[in-house]
Image 1 (cartoon, helix red, strand yellow):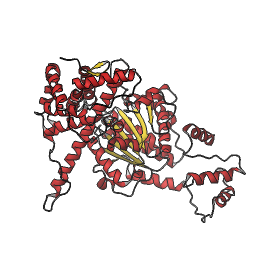
Image 2: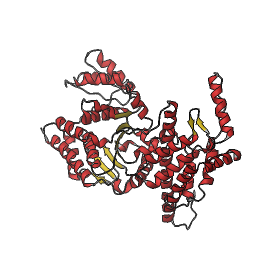
Image 3: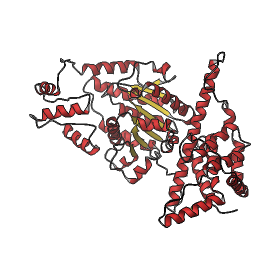
Image 4: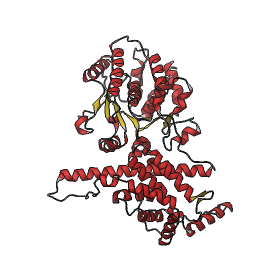
Length: 522
């Protein structure tokens, strides 16, 4: 058998084995998906098994060494997909389509238009694979064991339905098709992550491996210790309700018996939702296979607060803080290991923005899809879920519901200002409220009683408004403006007569913002 090269220092055969093993391992808890990922990894680079592609690789290496421009890339993806299509003829059409689509999209983007492969390169690849008897045997085992394709509805729904068609049947067909597409994305995610991981390892002349971050539930003891030391004594009814919300949330997690699903935590600001959601996650993980906790918030300011709170509650000031991965545009000062982990979310606890999560669910870009399989066996806390536009929210919850049903994902929706929607019927059937209606209503009422409202007349300018603030008798004042420009202008006017005016803005860098917050706390 010819030793074709996938890259200058790695044989195609070794690359195919490595990628297939890692892709299958990533989905090991779901045998049907694992078999599809293994087959995709075993066939994804067959197009490189041709003399023409090997010549292209040799000329490219020589050009780079001589400092000359690289040759135009020679296609190998479509040839790989065509060869795979022929090798998988005995497989169910849905399973075969899932594998070949993943191969077509493992370079470029999801849904990439498929072009014709080179017949000559396809024939060479098939001949090479026929000589690799052990690879052929491994592929046949996956084909014979595949049952997933036959278990789903293989009919693609029409873009429009004629009069007289059973709408219930049409909706069921559409739902089955969407579910196939999510499985397609999961398989492609595992393939892309394994392919990029192996390529990076080969470039460094080392053996590839999917890094094994510890499961987040291993830090349950740290959370229990730091949580107990950080609890305030019950000085008033709101403090008592804060404890009640935490206890009810944890009890609901234990009562779930580890069953994946949707859970709802709606409670007012200051009641300790971050603490309660962490308590829910650790309690739920005691009864499930959940390995990862993902906290997604809509705004950078909320994300930063979640990062700080999570680090403090789980690890205190200890060295374990490195296990909390920040993935957002304002994250600074992270180690190279943490920056690498943002590419595939290989960390036990991830605190990110809602947009990063939604990109993984919906985007066609490989950088986003690569993280998708990490949502399996995970607990996702979707903070302030009501801020997501309703159309996008409905689509996202539908996608998450497929992960819940098929991949062991659990979703906790938290909010301080919930939408006036009957979420049980409108968005997620079967959602479980983790806090009783009585506790939630009383907490909201007590929270309202902590504030006295006064509605002053409208002001004609920022200067007039700043003067009114200056004349207020309160010794401590917080001014919130609707735009950053207005906040800056008001702060400038107030600072002319008061040296203790602090201006806080999302335009600041994380270090600057934290410096100002420290001053506020002091």
